[in-house]
Figure 1 (cartoon, helix red, strand yellow):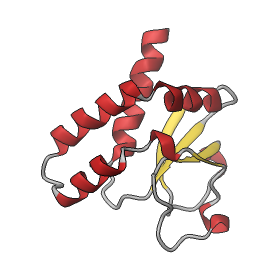
Figure 2: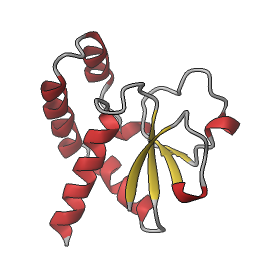
Figure 3: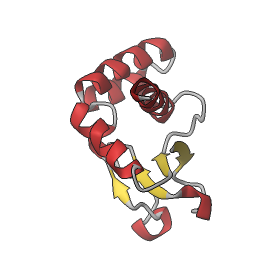
Length: 119
């Protein structure tokens, strides 16, 4: 249902609905090139958490814990994500350079755990 992809990668037929999950628009990309169908910035980490993480990227575990707390409190945005996925595959697009330490990974894990709990 959900997958993640860097927004700077070219659009592919396998993407399904392309949902940008960053609070800020990715640098250097036009709307046409990004090919974003929905911008769900409300599901991204809060501005304060985002800034903190970018200043101290060493504390991945703490960022992950804090963002999961935010997601648990952000039921409305999470419901929007699931509503979008009712129609098929959703690619959660992110702009971060690090493919292993970014909020989209945490978001994907969270959405999958909520989905599994519903089943």
